[in-house]
Structures are given as structure tokens and as C-alpha cells.
Image (cartoon, rainbow, N blue to C red; front, side, top):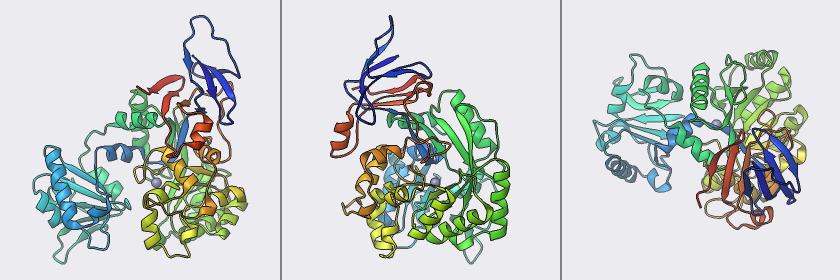
Amino acid sequence: VLIRNACDINGRPIELRFNRQIEAVAAQLEPAPGEEVIDACGGLLLPGLHDHHMHFLAYAASLDSVDCSEETLADAATLLEHLQQQLQARGGAPLRGIGYHEGEGELISRQQLDEVSRQIPIRLQHRTGRLWIYNSAAIALLQASDYPHGAERDSKGTLTGRFFHMDDWLQQHFPRSPLNLSRASQKLAEYGITGLTDAGPDNDDSTRTMLATAQAGGELLQRVVLMGRPELNFEPSTALKPGPCKIYLKENALPDFDQLCAQIGEQHQRQRAVAFHCVTAAELHYALAALDTAGTSGFDRIEHASVCDDQAIAIAAALGVTVVSQPILLAERGDRYRQSVPSDEQPLLYRARSFLTAGVPFAGSSDAPFASANPWRGMAAAIQRTTPSGVEMGSAEKLSVKEALALYLGDPADPGRRQRTLDEGQPADLVLLKESLDEFIKAENRLPTVKATWIDGRQVYVNPA
Ligand SMILES: [Zn+2]
């Protein structure tokens, strides 16, 4: 296949021949006899985008779920009405609500969900991802006689339907409904995403098998880097590679420091990096202190670094630790942050430029389904840093268009440090936009039209328009 008349990330004309790999790149190439030729009409041609931190299975499930993230749904009565409507609209199929938040009010209860239905299972996930609330019909489906500590009980010992920090357990004990992985993967292809890093801390061999099977069956098109449990280990294939060990820090239950350092050392011994989930300043400093003590692998990562002070940036730079973050959360939750985050911490939220300036390898991601999986929204957020109501947050942290693009062009194994390029011999993972670089830079809404996406030389998406 020959793509003609495109422009590259520097705005230069580019023509590119590929099979499964890029075979030739030049300002101009002549079509070979019988060769398929695509006229890019001046559109921007890039290496396919990689989402460096998301949760693919949860994302697939989210596309089947009821979105309860709307601010108005923090009100219990409005939420219950919304669920009732959704129940009817879906012909009485079990409901899985996501993005729920109680606002200033009380958390919704099992009994309130029972008012919506006693027969049909209703499950509601808190937007932090750390709490599920089940109605009685959903509890009845749990295949368990014994519940871990996170299962809340009332004074009589009855389950309240609230399950804290039990995501993994619930997944194992609630009957699985088949996930539509194909739809989720196709959606990502439409965005120009050709690879993703799944950042689930509980990913294990069964996750690996599920994803590998989906790739082999053509339901999962993207290349995947799989983070996961300490023991996760497997032979990499071109489509599925093991990623760092994910260490999920919780400020109110930090692990023993020496044990944590030993765990890091063990992973490094196995040539495996670690990736710390850090959303608070305390979690971040704890992770950095542990890395400082245990030593770094050169590929260790901090995920989110949601609140990051200058000192933490300096330590990360000195240690050579990569930060993978989500400025998109400012665009989605910025107004809430302005209310709930102390004002002296607000300038420290989802920083970007400061990482680049300090030489910290920095890459972008969606954390989908906890934020939109659309990488172009992620870039727009990194460029504009505006809240949903249009207020700028941390203007000093804004990125240029090219820097924002680069957030998704990193080598999945070493994001923020090595960038993928359109060079001969590179895999033909490509995304072609309708817009030229100039048009993309000037576009008001920053959401370009993806014309086509290729993975491993195969067209996985073409814009029907
Ligand atoms: Zn995540």
C-alpha cells in the first residue's frame, strides 16, 4: 500500500509505502504497478497512537454500562429515577451503573436500589472505582458464602450492599456476562489507537489468556502491554507484551517500607519494572522514597502523579522515573477539583510542562473508563487545561500541540523517552487524519477527523464519510 500526499508531524510532505512494516518513506514515491494507492489529500500521517494507561476490560464493560456521572445524578431521587428509566429502556436487562458520586449527600443504599427493582440485578460503581453498591438481586447472584473485610454490614450483620476495595473479588464472584471486546477495540481504532497499556494491578495469567485469545480471534485489534500482579510473567508476542508490576498505593494503608523496597528489588531482579499508582502527594513521595532506596530499573513508572510538587519532580528527574498521567481529568473533573482540592494544591494537579522542563520522561493516557478514551480529548486537555465550565487550571503547565501529540507517540516499553517514528522497518501502525498539521493546530475544538487506522499493515478503521 502506498499513502501519497500526506504530511508528517513536522508539516513536511511525506509518502509512505508499507506492508506489515514501513517499507519506504520519502517526500515522493512512485506507485508500483498494481499497488493500492491512498491519497491523503494533505492529511497528517502519524504512528498509531498508544494509550499508555487504561483498563481495557473495564472500558469494554463501560460501553455496556449506564453512565451515572452527570452532576445532577448525585441527588438520590434523580439517580433512582434515571436507573428506573434505563431499566425500562434496556428491557429489564441487569444494570451496571458507573461514574456514580454522592455529591454532598449520603451514599445510596441497597434498599434504595431495591426500590428500583427487587428482581433485576443492579450494580453501581462509585466514580473512584473503589466502591460498588449492589441491590438485593445482585447480592443474591454473588457466588460466595464468605465475604472479605470490605463488605460492609449493618448493626444486625446484614450486608449493606456496599463493597469497598473489592473490585477484583466481585469480578470473580459475580457471574460473568460476556464482554463485547470487539466493540471497545473498534472504538479505539476509530480514535487512531493502535496500542494500549493495560494498567490493572490484578491482571494475571487469566487476563493474559483472555486478551491473547481476543487478539487471536480478531476481537482485540490493538497491541497490548499488560501490567499486573507481581507474579505475572509470560513470553512476549508481537501483539502482547508483559509490562511493569503494578503497585497500588493507598495513602491510608501504605505498605511496610522495607517490604515495599524488597518487592521492587525482586521485580528488578526479574528484569521487570514497577509502576506505582500515586494520586496523592503522600503516595507519590512514598513511592519515590522506595525507588530511591531500592534503586531504579530505568523503566520504572509513576502512574497519575495527580498531585505533584516541585520536590517530587526533582526526585523523579534524578531517579529517571517516568510519569504517565492524564491531564484529561482537568477537562472532565476540573470544576470539582476547584471545589474539593485545597487551593494551594490546585497548581500541583496534573502537571505537564514542568515534567518536560525537568527532563522527566512524560507520557499521556486516558485511564479509561475513568475518563474518556478519546486521545484527542486528552491532547486538547493538555493543550488548553480548561475545566468543563471553561476555567483554566495551571496555565503554566500547558503543552504545545506537538508536545501533546508526543504524549501518545511514545514507545510502549519506554514512554516519554523513546518516540515511535515513521521510519523504514517500523511496524505499519498508522493513523491518518483528514486535517493537515496546520489545520490540526488551528482547529478550534481540537478534535480531528481520523480518516483511517492501520495496525500491523492491516486497515482496522476507515472513515465512512
Ligand atoms: Zn488506572
